Length: 252
Image (cartoon, rainbow, N blue to C red; front, side):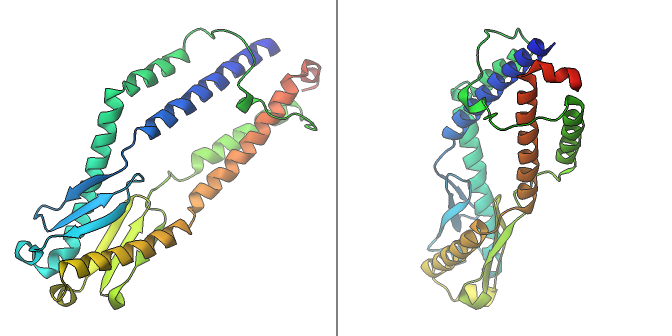
């Protein structure tokens, strides 16, 4: 029984390692930049490798294309268009590289034969020195509790953390999350008096402030998930220590 458990555990470890590599490969194909423009052509946005805005370009004839009170809406629209291009470019790259087929084969391998035996990858070999595992029944009960905690965590939200930039005395306000621009507002009277470069500079200032604040605001939900992951890692290490000494199973 113990040998079968170790074989299955090693198999799952190899699967996890391969999945990690596959996800890294997908990330490597994400585009460095993408651009999008609002429907009027007044505002063009560039997003970076993280999908967040990095710069904006305001057309020299923006005031012929839109009214001042529509400028903030154009900023949001251009941002969403750029993100759409970023996602489309990423999906296209993954399709060209056959990434989905690789993912399907990896998933199918979990239902196939266990494959060649051998020690798990070094990254999955926990340090068992000093580990004093509790009985298997106790570990199982704790593991069920921790997995239950994971299921109860709220789904991760890219907009869970938001940050705001307010240049120009608060007459231009940009709200940013890790998912992109949440909202934008601008005083129409102030907008009507700005040149394209002034508007772009105001956006850049707001973006820099919001990005900095966003970087310093960890997602509380992610912190809770990380804590639970740590608990599961500890239980996993105990289980390995227990299974490595079969005689202890008799007392479980």
